[in-house]
Image (cartoon, rainbow, N blue to C red; front, side, top):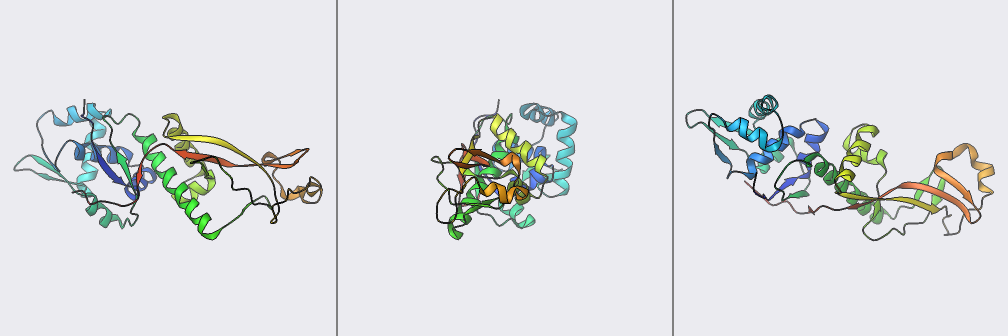
Length: 251
């Protein structure tokens, strides 16, 4: 079994791998980085041993390796029979990745790697949305109903799946599946988000509002109660992983 490793994976590299379906490639790259000082001696059974260690078959491992050699994530010295793992800095430069956020990876296996990567992206875009909302002081507007309600439980903040999908440039279904994967392994916590619709003065909007705006409203996203119009908002997300804001050079 691989000893507990430590590295910080650039968030941009994670997004590239998730959106381009190169997660196995990233998994292998991180594994090789974790078990070496960027250089590894390749023996007759190395690929078989490494593939078993991270839970993929040898054929897939070699296919990913060929791609990484072609794309210069790795280089091979035929004379010494050794692999060199390129630095994060080189990959960031190659793909023009500008974000300074990275994921702290300190695990001894890769069984939940997809869920971990999904949580990293969710955390990054949730935090970005929170920062932007605070900076612009934007009040939520759902289906034509304004709301000033931004009182969330500690460490929770909303992240609409559609918004997350647009950030990644993927389908809503893919974004939802990533969220489920992160939740499955406990890398995120989720709370349902219901609140009373308020006007821009902080007063509850009366139920009579429905009579005049019924065509604008999505019936699956509001409920009428004695106290007012209860809105179903985007799920509130808490991140249970560690993201580092400043990227540190790791060769």
